[in-house]
Length: 424
Image 1 (spheres, helix red, strand yellow):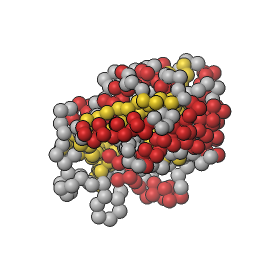
Image 2 (image 1 turned 90 degrees about the vertical axis):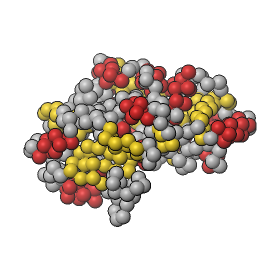
Image 3 (image 1 turned 90 degrees about the horizontal axis):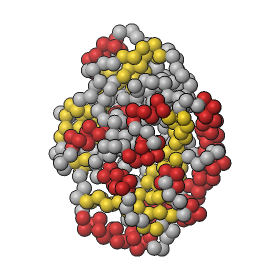
Image 4 (image 1 turned 30 degrees about the vertical axis):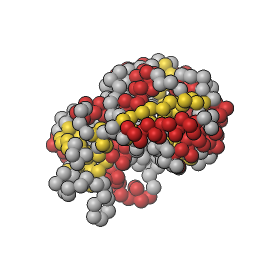
């Protein structure tokens, strides 16, 4: 279940697990006097604590039962979803329509709202960019809508007149989010995946070539780079995805193949795994969760926390060959064995690293070693200014003075448990 205690993290004392089915029931729970409440969408925040609260004594508010798609407008390009709606469920509703959703390569079971509130990264853009409006239940039990909602205006836009409040509730514990308006993308006429491989010794030059292609708009800022462990190859693998009108995709593909011949990047034949990722870019999640869970983690979604200890480290790093070559060295210095690493391009300036440290869930000594490895990674990356953009429950961020004042104003009685971005 989502609130099971994952082996990678220190255990918590949980007072009860509450499972509302509607937003009205959430309001009743908030007004009931139970505190502190720790809301989760579906609990699949693997490697960062899954459904665990930061501290002891919280009641878990499991929102997976709020699983309705309240509205779907493919003409204007938005959907209104509740926390229990998975990315796979929305993708299935969009099958055969002119729209797709910005999927991740994680499990199709994961919550759209949970990942967006975490500021996770889809294959087309950061998930926070998909959000245009939120329905929130505040600490006093009031239900409010912030941002854009159907009926406000004809055009779904994240910004309206005055201060924009939507992102006050991303990476925060100021309210319970019971619904969100998310933007949909036009379905591309064609999606082409170009896999490139390169040797480990060519990492810096290959990354600089990918950065140059991104700067010159030959490719979108959506490239993924996998280290040899993640790629299951002798060298690195890069996934470059082109999408749009068929003629444009064909022309850009020819240009890129020519440019690759002047770089360390070697065009590779597409494999079955490459096709799975291509389908994700096209809006079709893999029903077998092949890429992330089965290929790199070796487990299906329902068995990850039960059978696998997993710690994730997600630092932001400059998009440059020099910086990413440095991160490779830091990882080698900190880790006894090379972990699974995926590099996701965010834009022309920044990439993230998704570093996964796995171990047998029933091995306490391995758990201690994994936590010590993660501590070393945090310290080594922080020394270079490479800080994580998502935190785990054992290493929460300390709220700034202004964040603490806002939290106190919205929740003076401590109805909601401190989160990973508002502790202290």
